[in-house]
Image (cartoon, rainbow, N blue to C red; front, top):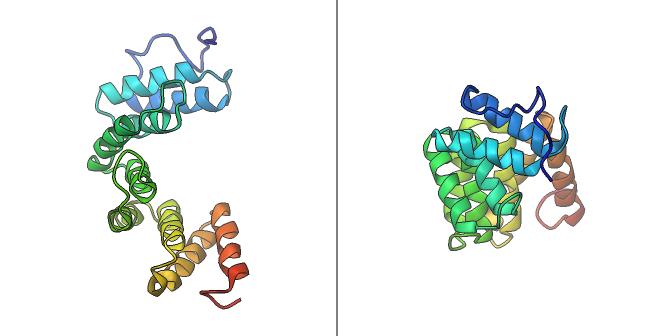
Length: 180
């Protein structure tokens, strides 16, 4: 159900810069400082994406991946993540890596996921290091890189990533590939 436009979520998109559209879209999606309105968020992300904005591509891709305000479409999500990643957007690169990791819209390819997570880590270390560590931890057959996952989780923890605390705890609880 769409809501009436508010000062935080204006009706006119043409006059808003792409960064503003994406931020307003995130507010509408989460219901922060404005009523939650997923359809409006998609509209704002699409407007930014249509103007070639890398974060707009990434956020619209997430909507397609999750089926938020649009039908789920893994191929469209991958297309948007590729555009975002090619423009140097960390979120798009991480999301594309997750698609390869899970085989969502592309064939499952751990090596390509790893390459993308490494690229993302160079762009924005805290979240990308966490994602890269998750990828390594999922691929338990790659035992030689588990110590790298623990190091990356520790780095993400040091930078305040709360999810990394949980994942590092799982590493220690398992005890199969790192000291307890």
